Image (cartoon, rainbow, N blue to C red):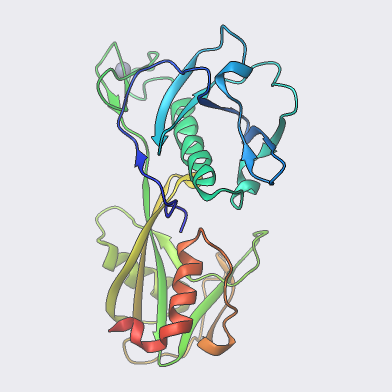
Length: 277
Ligand SMILES: [Zn+2]
């Protein structure tokens, strides 16, 4: 999954200036500056390639590499091009994909919290922790993380898959949805399956979790099974264009190293109803 990068991710908050060799992500309107090396690996600007007066903000480190962000400059270093961050989820190596997505999450959050939501004064980065602090009223804001569930609803060797309505992404997905106020994750699983395909569920089993930084989400994967009737008689037509039971053997294997949905589909394809044990 996206976080399985084979290196240590250290998000300890620090205030420090970049060294010449450190990576500085540049973001502008959903795009980032990058280029590819001869092996096809994604390369992001180094501090030494950027204007001397550019101010960069420390984000995190992965293994021995330090990552920063900076406000967009009028020109980007030679050889780099702007590319949509959303289109880059399969860049190699995996840890740079994770670094880019996580940096983008933080960049979006910093941009969206320039002003205090309580008194409208200009916010400042916290001194001791990753936060934005209002110097006027003391309001402190932390990075936004939205919890959501991914649901593998299974019955013997079948699982419910769906397709989202009106999205470019047309592969099968699993049922999913955001945790709402006052809910546990299990409540969300029960509500979402009822809303999306009209079924009651039981035997809700936690499988795995993952950050999904590009949307500031945090995903928790659960398997469950229908409680009683398992026939899909209606679907949530605002969200889904289709939802159906599909046999594990008919489920295409997903060559996708980043998403929890793909991981859960592959896991089910292998274990079938044993995912509930
Ligand atoms: Zn304030």
